[in-house]
Length: 252
Image 1 (cartoon, rainbow, N blue to C red):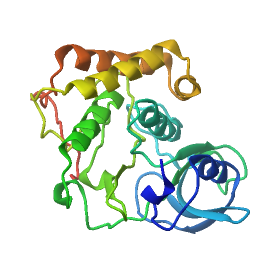
Image 2: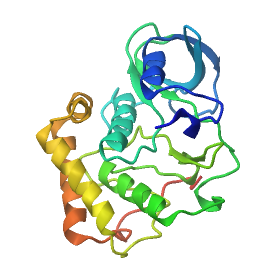
Image 3: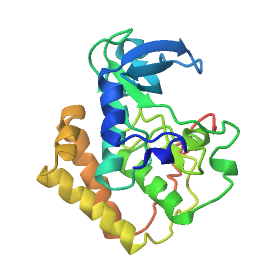
Image 4: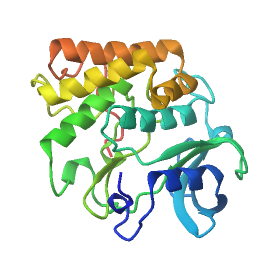
């Protein structure tokens, strides 16, 4: 990842970004959106480096009937880690911040400067392969809430994905606005990416894969593998299930 993908004027390595998010001094700047869970806009400063980020404290999570309490922040970090492990890199750098945070343990995600008027439904450019990767990503992480506004159009035209707190459930929960490719064939390069993910999760040879096991339950990880394996066997994008609500609400 080049930091110019995030901000044309920002030249930092991924390591510098992660280190700043993990250990930098946090200052609360505001609350960008009202929601059921606490979400804070912060600055994070380490030496001469200062980044803006989204801080989601664990204590600010509201109980959900279908997700275990105090697991949403780990799911945010797991989504970032999976996006790196599969080689798609479209989730902003996200860490589990364990120390020196205003409200304790929480996830901290690099803020992406973007045009808030742009969402999935009005993207200036629709890159089919990229959108297919996003659709597959949501299937394998079992995203229960892929709204159109969760795709950010970065300042240089790169698409970023945010809000992954309600993902990775072991039961089928997929709700997404991206059903454009239902019943279409999955192209071979994408099948190969899925096979790579399966291999890495099973072998645990990479630290990224081992990190997933510290964030999710073994059952949840088994289901990631199972969903990916199903896609490699059918080689078809699934269609919406008619017996349940396949779309999030609101759509944006």
